[in-house]
Length: 231
Length: 255
Picture 1 (cartoon, rainbow over the protein chains, first blue to last red):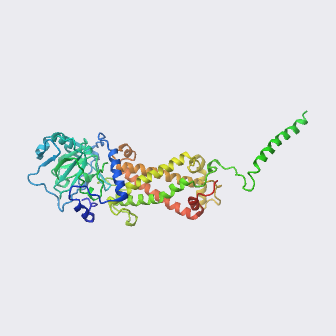
Picture 2 (picture 1 turned 120 degrees about the horizontal axis):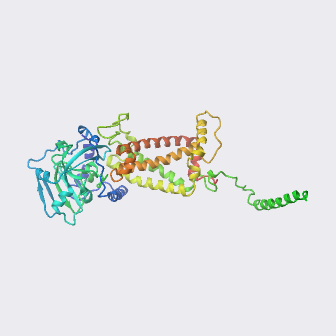
Picture 3 (picture 1 turned 90 degrees about the horizontal axis):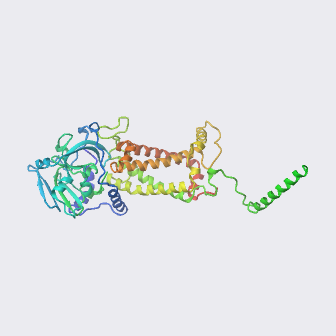
């Protein structure tokens, strides 16, 4: 269990989080630091190159699986509802609901890249699943789409992304890890995995992917963690 | 003819000398003429030019904020090496830095400070380095192995009481040049390894230079320790030579 994003810290900012229960992005930081954070997010977006790939790593670089921290915000490990499906919505031509079997029939992408946690640790695993860009192509994005929101059944943990990072070729909706189906400790049945974001952006226990015109923040983002969080 | 020639020449020469002496005399009166100065001492410049003083003193709050927020960030994962493969040689795995050294309160707060102040640290460093290069200040400040190595060793031997007298004074002694040059290099490595940690994918080539993400993290922390060591010895030496402290405020006499 990863300990840094602890309950205590969650409680410190619980007021902030509850204020942010709506849709608007909430900023717990103000003044100079807020201004610099806004500036840094622009800088991060400018540094991001949609075509730049993170290097694929050999199997020998893989972290022993029991050494990869697991993380969820619920009191106990979230369990998928019985008739789980992924809802794809927002400003799309074809809103849909996809079962795991349907997702597994879509083009499968696998990658082994380095994971970067905001806490400062790194780990390596291989992940397989469907590219978010493939889902986007399937759903047909409206021209006004600028952000992608990922929601979960882990006590409504969520995160919204810039469209460019979501459509990056190394951003997957993963249903498998290290050659086996995703376990509930790492976000089963479906989780977001990407080579170009910090770990807290990669929502586990997915329920919804919404293509939106607005930035809808995120669980940690609304408590002060940077929203762009690219690596 | 041979007898006259010598008497002619001295007369001619002395005329010239006299003229020069007359020209110089009024200026070299009570104020005294400027003595010949070694190249390295920066003729006509104050000991600590204004820009160097400003950059130096700005570094005090900037470095405190960067180090304090950096240690708060480090406290989130106070280990070195990737998950499952932490470096076995590092004796303090899992030991966070003491609370009183940290700034920012929690990880997100520390990141706000670290990434906000980093811009000012880099800006201050860039302005300093541009001035350092363009003004020629580097000549009397930068450690140049050919010029300064023996001087640095002599100064070190003097500090260790192996040598009874210090080496002949210069603008800075060899050891000072070595220490200040190292401090500049430390600053550069801090910024580069920090960028490597900030964007290990977008700046992948830079991260590779440090042996990957965890290598960059190790270098970032190790150089922080070296900088702390520099600051500690800097403070001891400035306490022993308080005049240098005054120069860093007033600028000192023009050399």
